[in-house]
Image (cartoon, rainbow, N blue to C red; front, side, top):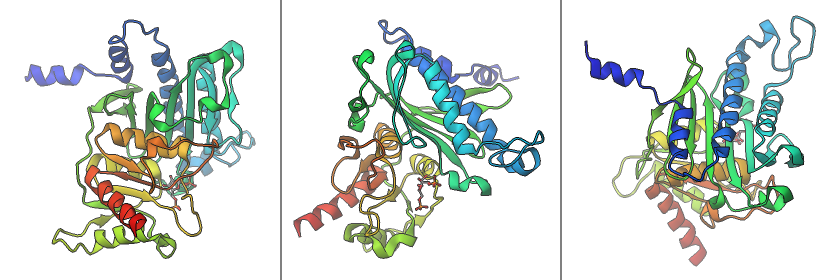
Length: 340
Ligand code: AFP
């Protein structure tokens, strides 16, 4: 029997153990972040369980259907939002929450306040639920100095000020990818244990990729640099092979593949949507944070995405993120256009 291999499989690095290890590097830490994260993890497990049952909705009454008791059930995105809001408020560690599902920011009542602001999309890609495609939760975390005086300005900060960001993908497996500002780590939910286990330590995105990911149906409305970049992906003039196109239409899934296999994901501006489609606070910032932490880049067409200062909580921005060299090419095309 190979005891060494056996030991490897039994010495499981759960996400809780991982975060506590990280926490022990900061002796002054009171564990607030670990507690906040454990509440986010609980939300992810809950949503994962609900998503897994979505295909049975008609049978057992979920997601907008009527259940056996004749009660109208909540849609999965509404349910996920409620789960996360409750989990975050009950952690006692948050003061402001911004959710894709809520028009206004939620200011946590003073007795339950802590020093963290959490911005999140509880169920991104929800238009894919009915066909079983991977969807996910995206989150970003800011820390403020004075939790007593929680103000909206505390979340209208550039993404580079985030202290952590991550996403949980509900796909063929449930995978949570997290960065607390020192690299990126991926954890997979072991359903039999109910624990996220470290399966993708220290993720680094390949410097250059072989895949581009974009909704080409919008091509007729693209600006010059986007059109030129996609043309180069398909018909490279430098003798390199053409890139493959992969597009799921679910940001978490498209970014997850980009992070692991390399390449570039873009949701550019177009004539119909001059600010693109994706939301700055809970889509662009967390994914840009992860990309940079994994050695990639993220660009808005004008600037480094994490430098952007949002003026509104649901603001949108164009986004180009992925392998360092691929994003560098896009930056050069925008710079050339600017010059011209
Ligand atoms: P839904 O939540 O409405 O499915 O939108 C998903 C999303 O915000 C993001 O996850 C995708 O990357 C992007 O929109 C896809 O947009 P297009 O359908 O316009 O390609």
